[in-house]
Amino acid sequence: MTLLEPHNLPFAAALVVMLVLAVVQLIGVADFGVADFGDADIDAGGDADGMPDASMFDGLLTLLGIGRVPLTIWLALFLFLFAGIGLSIQELAQSLTGSPLYSWLAALFAGAAAVPVTGVFARPLGRAMPKDHTTAVSTESLIGRRATITDGVARANSPARAKVKDIHGQTHHVMVEPHEAASEIHAGDEVLLVRREGNQFYATALAERRLSPTHSS
Image 1 (tube, rainbow, N blue to C red):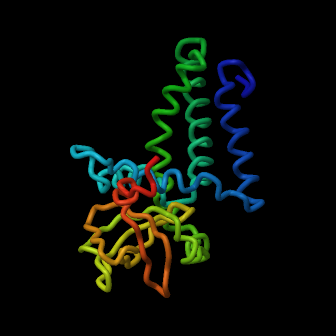
Image 2 (tube, rainbow, N blue to C red; image 1 turned 180 degrees about the horizontal axis):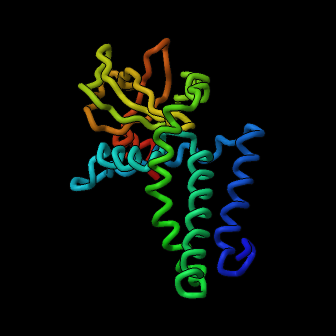
């Protein structure tokens, strides 16, 4: 059974994409899209009552290993495992039934298995990896990113603790005051970091931005 046979094409394609990601990582342009997963937990918190709590989504991302390593590395690991599991499934089907599975069916099984297995490998990999990609991120680069107040109430001259994820999906904890002196931002509120003075960040609650006449059209 060769890699380029029709029933193995999804797995051959996965290996090609994995190699492309590896090249992208090596040449240092691998930051694209990293924030997509990192901000997913904030978006998933929802604007309406009854939506899943952000911490639950954080737990799911942690279980899957998302955010423990840069997104390109997570994807490359997933594609490698997807291809390996898929080829193993086809080999097993060939030996048991005399013919491989349809490519789409084998890809479905392999994808379902590869997601949790990727999490199993990504978590210890994240702990073992050098942390250069997190420590190299400048504090200034967090401006313009979404954050969530985790503890207390942010008021003028009375900051509250917030969490924000950088372009690598790594979580940072910062102290935040409202950009508008009369505002209060409560735990669980989603904010936009708009400026920094020293180690102090100033933020605008996104709910206030949506309600602001200057942002309506």
